[in-house]
Amino acid sequence: MRNFIRFISRFFNLILFLVLEIVCAILISRTNTIQGNDLLNSSNAVSGFLYQRQNALVYYFGLSTTNDSLINENIRLREELARTKYSTDIRHDSVTLLAVPSSDSSHKIEYAKYIYRSARVINNSVTQRDNYITINRGANDGIRKDMAVISGTGVVGKVVHTTAHFASILSVLSSLQEVSVHLKDGTTGIARWTVEGHTPNADVMYMVDVPSEIPMKIGDTAWTTTYSFFPPEIMIGTISKVLIVKKTGKRLVFLKPATNFRNMMYVYVVENTFQVEQKALESHNIPIPQSPKGGKRK
Amino acid sequence: MSIQLRNFLRFCLIICVQILLNKVTLRWWSEPAGFPVFIPLLYPLFILLLPFETPVYLLLLIGFGTGLCMDMLMNTGGMQAAATVLVAYLRTNALNALLPRPLDEYPGQSPSVKNLGWVPFLTYSGFLILIHHSLYFTIELWSFTNFFMLLLKIFASAVTSMLFVIVYLLLFTRQISSRT
Picture 1 (cartoon, rainbow over the protein chains, first blue to last red):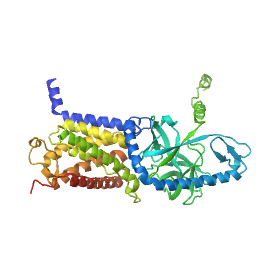
Picture 2: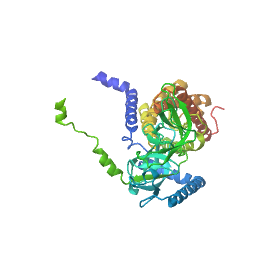
Picture 3: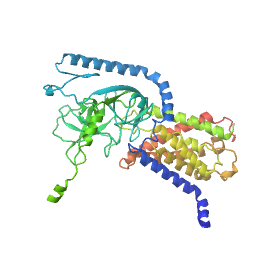
Picture 4: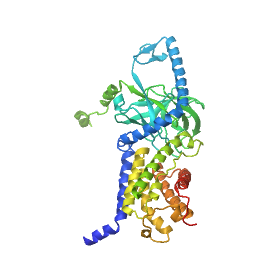
């Protein structure tokens, strides 16, 4: 026992060092999952407050750029409004007017109803492997987990954690999240940010294993599909480069994200009012009980 | 000004500067295409400038606290803390190797340009900051598939951090040098 105490006191510093490193390792393993990031992220009170102060100061210097992007968006909305006014089939809901695609004009189906809330970005990163964004709205403003977040130009991410006044968003620039995407000719696929052998960069997202017979040109647009949790027809990005993977003969498509993640100031949090109902319905699909008859027949 | 108060104020200053640096990266720092994005990490400087006579266990705990603080600000969940604890642990060895006399013969002093000299101080801070950045970026990328990119990121970030360290030294060193 004496020897043990002597050992402890002799190597106390080394032991403390190892203990602290193990604590760090535990923290890392906990925080890099979506569920585990509620302790150490910038939506908590102290750093949220700090970043809000800092943002309040810097905000004034970016006003002209913000103004420009707002004007551009207004123009786009006006154009869209004008188009819907003169199209024959209009789907009405309390918030938006959307033209029903001509293919299903025989019967109109409202499969979703969206409520948009604007929010200001107060903390943002593009340099990490999984990037998080903090906004200045939280549970008090009706923001809840798993809502989609878009910007004026394209997709942004998903709400992963909320406090009373702040919410943190897992951006699509992350290894934890993929977006389902469709191209101009209707081909669907999955866009992700991290691909083996390429450094993650805020200017590129990838679509892997695209069959080579699909026609595509550089500059084509990629949109969200109807079965992601994002609202449909939100721009994800434009094709900037197409590579052919020699091993599989399929193509690797480089998308340039439509959102500029580096100087994003405003985002819209989108609430799908039918999402809870849809989730509840779909949760019935998963457990398929094995009937005793089926077991005997074998 | 007591030595604790001075260190506390230095801590606040360095953390504030680091918060601003995190933002600078997003605006224009990382624009050249093909170059990996990086953040200059200045805050290990706080650990480097603690007084000579700080016991190692206290250094480790302060390093852990500082790293955790940065983790909360940068959403990195323990990576900064791991790197900073390593720096705090190696600090004593680095100082022992650079100083002519044992550490307890410098009562009430902190490592600075005045009592170390420019070249030894830059060696000391450069070495420890390089170690900090290597560990941090290795944990962050978590793969060696892009080894060259990792190296580039570490070196670019370390060089930029050292520039900020030099700026700090130029701003906060009293001009009357003891060696002349």
